[in-house]
Length: 96
Image (tube, rainbow, N blue to C red; front, side):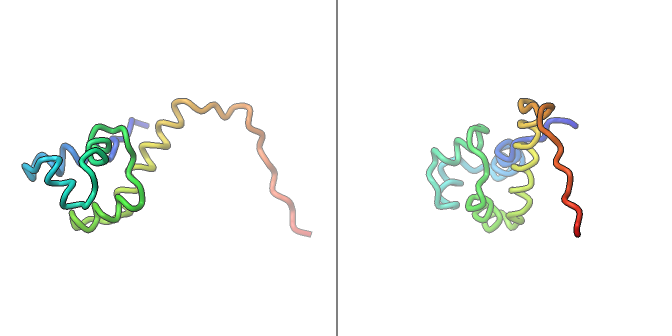
């Protein structure tokens, strides 16, 4: 599996650049601080459900698409660092 893009990178490259809008202008439209938006664009902050709703409204997209991008990114990151080899498999309890 290839490394998924952080949703902030998608927002930066595929949304903000084509709109020719500054970070400050875009943050004002979203009603968030410039610092929070910068954190997302610089891939330091993830997309929360609240942010996904704001992006969906502002960009006429779905909140689910933003959250799915974030989940894919987070899961890939976890798979790179989390070792589950020692986790035991739990068998289902059979119905009586």
